[in-house]
Image (cartoon, rainbow, N blue to C red; front, side, top):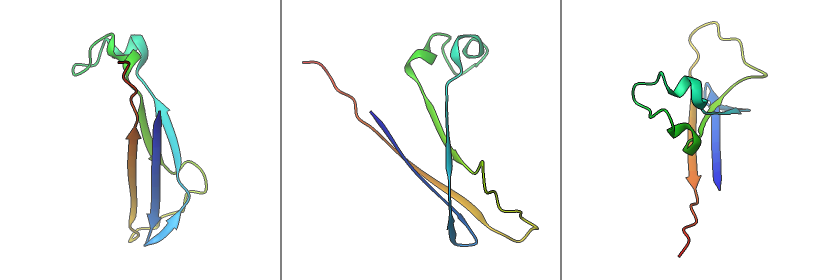
Length: 77
């Protein structure tokens, strides 16, 4: 089980955050130098971002994102 907690702030005020989950799959993983061509079946990438209600920045604003992942792995005995 994977749990993702993410938050975003613009000028210190909390804003809604979206999440993208992806993996490179077979074709793309073959071209990644730091990634084995068969490792895509054991990975998932989760990235926070703002995909809707994006504030228009005219400069001088500070945007930040934080992310925390929890991974629960069950091991057979």
